[in-house]
Image (cartoon, rainbow, N blue to C red; front, side, top):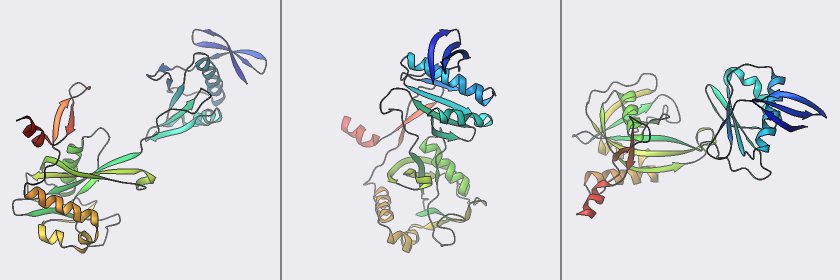
Length: 287
């Protein structure tokens, strides 16, 4: 059992089993929500870390701190054991670090949960011959089915939806495109490692037409007549795909308008942010 006695410039005198010990504190910075963030960078003995952590928690408790975040790089992962024994839990992990969380107050914690959704795109690309760009995949649930589908893929961290759609089409088919708008989106659950997914259906305009399939992921790719795509039993069977076909047709007839990306000022210098909305109807309402 540890208790705080007094503070001294990066050191704490801590009462451990009725004996006062001087222990070094963990370096930390305050977050914006009454908590602290610790980023470990130096190797240390597990017992030494455990003592520093106990002393630091005692200080943070006396200061009225709330949430505690500890970022452990992969090379120091052995230190996670001591933190877990103190009551920390795994919040999330990335390729090079593990993030642990802890709640000091004697009440239910209000720390945000780990990211719950992935974001993916479906690319609708039609040329002036009313042919759509379609692919057959080498892996996944569509492998070997003969189903022709639109290019799809996940949006990378820090990547805008419009940029992700252009990139995925380029990677899978070598076709250059111009992003037009988001036509629709839907949500699915319990997919990739039990996470939910947001799927954005994106319309793009082709700028090139010579297909070169991605050898690692794509079995085949082609420009397919629109009516042939629609006639596929797979498309006719699924309500969602039939509804999307109706949206594509309405878009072609200019009776449906989606959400183009309108650039906005970003809080990050030199970067753009995008707001997706029906700017056509908005402009019409101002006339």
